[in-house]
Amino acid sequence: MGLDMYLASLPRIDGMELKQLYLVDRNLAKWKEEGNELYQKVKGFVRHYEEFGREWDSIVTEIAYWRKANWLHHWFVTNVQEGNDDMFSYEVKRHHIAILYNNCEMILLNKVKPYDALPTMPGPYWGSTSYDFYYFHEIERSYTIFENLLKQPSFFDENILLYQASW
Image 1: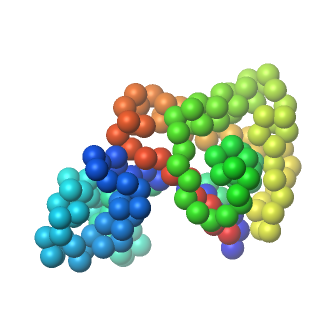
Image 2: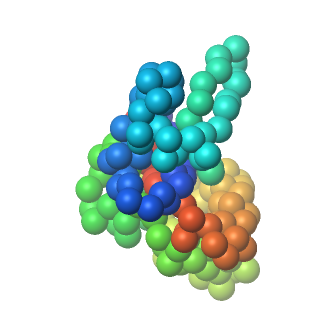
């Protein structure tokens, strides 16, 4: 129980909207077997995963995972989700990642106070609201994640980046 947050990507495929991509992903095995037309469009993007004794195929790629980094969730709710604090997926654009990257950098360089740039947010089992070791560790880790995304010039042209939280 607690706040879990994910950045994931789906490939941008000509003629396919996000809803279709999700639908295909949920039906990959069945539609592969049937030779479904939509499966044929995505088959080059399918990846095989094995973890904890399970195997599955998906067109979704996990980019990052955070646990109880409530400051980051607060930022996404405010800047991407238009104040809707729910468990739906929201598209994250390159400029969102650039802003987060810059905010993390400003905090790490002591140019701004953490509570001014990326304030914490209380919530049920959402972790500490202190600006402590864990907060700064997650700021530094997030800075690296965002930097790596921004270093890939075609990433946002080729992928749809999504944020989702659950608690």
